[in-house]
Image (cartoon, rainbow, N blue to C red):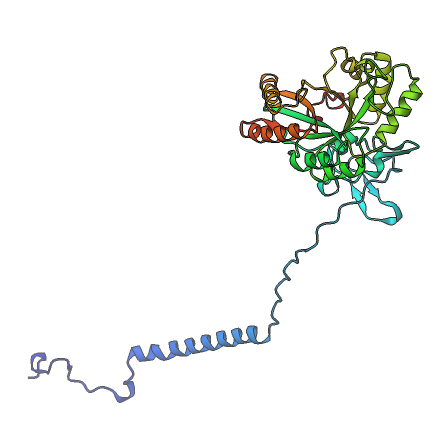
Amino acid sequence: MNSDLDRPLGQNGKRPDPKSDKTPAIRWLLPSAAIVCVLGLASLVTYTSHQGFRRPVPEPPKPQIAETPTAIPPPVPAHDNKSQPGNIVTAPEGGPKVIVVGDPTRRAQDPRTAHIPEPDMLEQSPQGPLPIIAPDGRRPLDIYARPWSGARGARVAIVIGGLGLSQTGSQQAIQTLPPEVTLAFSPEGNSLLRWMQAARQDGHEVLMQIPLEPYDYPRVNPGRNTLTVDASPAGTLENLHRTMGRITNYTGVMNYMGARFTAEPEAMTTFIQDIAKRGLLYLDDGTSARSKADSVAAQQGAPFAAADLLIDASQDRGAILKKLDELERIARAKGTAIATGSAFDVTVEAVTSWANEAKARGIEIVPVSALVRDPQKG
């Protein structure tokens, strides 16, 4: 009897069929391998066709950085009376167009061209080129002003006059004084146009000093073209324009002497009216208690400021520094203060030293235009 116990382990006693020697695993493997080969070949053909026959996409060119500075736009032509903020103005002879954006009265000169007058803000007169308000409303007060931070801390303006009287003194003042210090040019000076250009290129705001009649005139004489109380309005304007025409690019004027003239409202009205209509400020040096400049300027709507003190009545370094410390106390008490002085060597040295220390104490030195009472700005 043949039983399962008598058979060798792993044998069932039947001979395998030679026609069915392929196991199920082999039967499934062959079709699977074929499918994989077909898919792989198809992928290879697809990849080759894309890579072999597709044109490469060129990379976008890199932007070129210009090595030359951007050209300064040409000025708005003086004859165009339709120039308003946001309008497009065509330059003469088919030149490029300039788009004026925003308030034109808030645009300042480019620092690179601060020594060059704006052509549409000049009136050619027999007395020389005179400042005027541009057709689009820009004033010399706005365009020629030195920018400042706009902060509301303690601020002081220092105006140093007498520029042009001494060649070496003028050069020393321009090169030594901080650019925040305002410079005023004497009507009796020499080479004023050259010194004005040097001052503007160095960053200074500038004023023109106007000779006004003092008491005891002509024994005490401010110089040629002095404005006197007895002159006719036409004579007053004639002398005023002769002095104003000596330089350009100033934000305003200030008195040179003039205690008697500034005390006469009628004479001051003729003077201030012309200053106001030209878009200039008037600075009273504060040396005369009888001056009517403040009230006349208010009546005429003229930008106005008055100095709080004169720093160098005594040409002593210690005395000047004490005056500057007093200036700082005034500024801390009421927010602003204005001082005047002359371009003496001792004054220039003392102001330069004090200004650098004052900045470290939080005092901002600003141009005088920053501290005027300006009816146009409210």
